[in-house]
Image 1 (cartoon, one colour):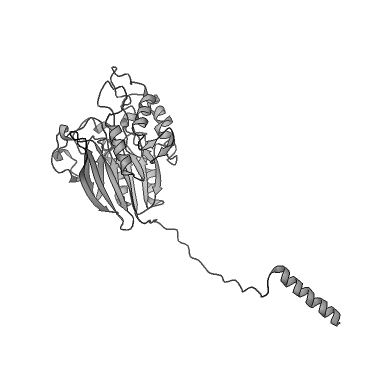
Image 2 (tube, rainbow, N blue to C red):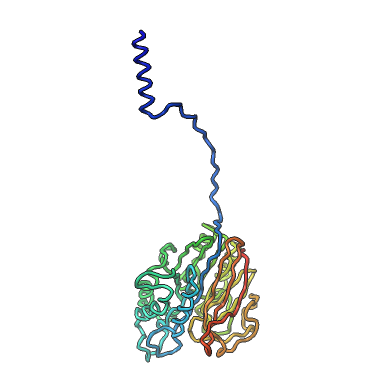
Length: 356
């Protein structure tokens, strides 16, 4: 009997040494974790992005389809070293040219010239540099001219690298993306929605405004929601063409605490607000400049900058730098303008806004 006990004891010792355990493991502790999916994502630190747009060549007989001012603008933006750059439409002349221009109907060539001009920011050939996010303007739509080739050329060139998360039929034209504590929603307003151009895809916008929200919510479209000038040529290709749909769009942004709406279309710089929501027109990317008179701005707007008339000849090309401060939930804006006499980049408008 003792022999069997001894063998049993030896087998027990052997089993313990094989498993590597000399003492019994403690009983597992079960901790109940309550996980809440955050409605906002916060970050820390500072980072910046640049907004600019509207760079068709002022020359009717252009040989490029792109303003000669775009290249120096791009070099200055690259020197800012932003995290990303946002272009708000009207890249090229498109179909809006006279028969005297050799670029008429050469849409792929125009977009290639635009890509070359902005290459200091982003090299489209190599796919390197600062990320650029682009939406169309009315010059990429063909305006009142039926020209599917223009949209096809845009889709196969500049738009081919844009996010494909937009609504059906608008992939790479309408889309959104996030960066740190910010969400960006970019709208193509020249796709028909309910039979109307110059509108946004409101159901898609509503979803974007309520899903994956961030402390900073920035929305972009080519056209101002509220016009800041009296240029009658702007009206047929802008959001105010359909005021009821425009109001739905604006009210949805106000309701969902959008931080700012960026746009172009008017070839100037104007910062204003309606219902506390800022509208920033940054359309001074090299296209023929427009004068500004506060008297012609939509009365819905409260003007912030400029507050006095600016003659057409006194307007300056430029861009807008936004620095996001994640810790304080504020963002600063600095408008940069090119002095045509000295060739020096100067500061125009400056502001600080708290995320809504």
